[in-house]
Image 1 (cartoon, rainbow, N blue to C red):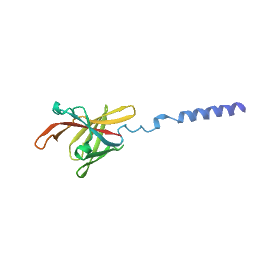
Image 2 (tube, rainbow, N blue to C red; image 1 turned 45 degrees about the vertical axis):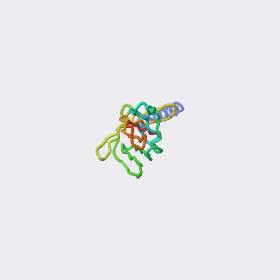
Image 3 (cartoon, rainbow, N blue to C red; image 1 turned 30 degrees about the vertical axis):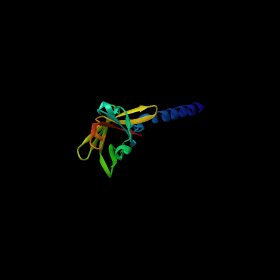
Image 4 (cartoon, rainbow, N blue to C red; image 1 turned 180 degrees about the vertical axis):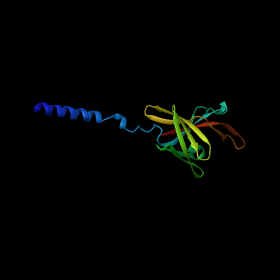
Length: 151
């Protein structure tokens, strides 16, 4: 009789191990899911005399620009953008090979590269935006600014 009890315990234990499968666990959401806040802009293509190329620019101080980007696990997003007013941009997203592509409901797209360094996560705009800075009361300097978001 003891033999059957031991056999029953072994079979029950084996069945318990087999029924626990990691394949049933849902896949974790992509690293880009969450809230991102506009951290800075990186200047490029400005005249060398300004000495700002490669520098981090505080876009809120410069031009009252700010943005939050909420990336949801259902592949939708909402961007709350402010620049002397507030507006929302909504759409869907795709994340492949460390590139986040935002597809706005209005038809435009934007792409960001994801990077993590020393536990700091950043999204850097792939195609920088054109900007003009006033450098005097009568002149401006044109260049580009790449937006960088942080989680």
